[in-house]
Image (cartoon, rainbow, N blue to C red):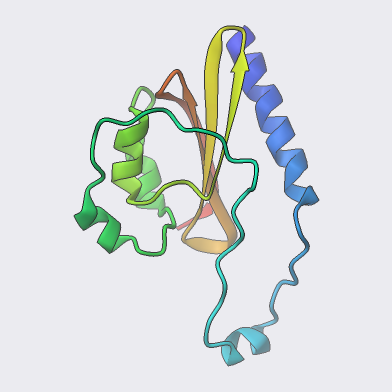
Length: 141
């Protein structure tokens, strides 16, 4: 119960911080058609150390996912209990942002990736002591 409360608290903090970032104008349909390049969203400056990984990332998978975005198909392959390094290898990219919280003797790492799909599509994967404890997504395709 305490772990669930901690995850809910962490989720609430992350969601409330979503409105605190730099403001970006959402492009209109006309400006999207006239734009040839787009910049990637800025990464969080509050990144902390990630769990140590002994596995090497699958470079073949990384080449397939040069954008670093997560798809719905990738998201659906992530299961509770998977190790951090296995999730990174599956997605083929490190998270867009990552934050760590030590609470009640457990280390919780919240990782988020920008997603393929709707504007603002993203996925959040929560790791507790190095393994997936929960996940959520919005707008992935």
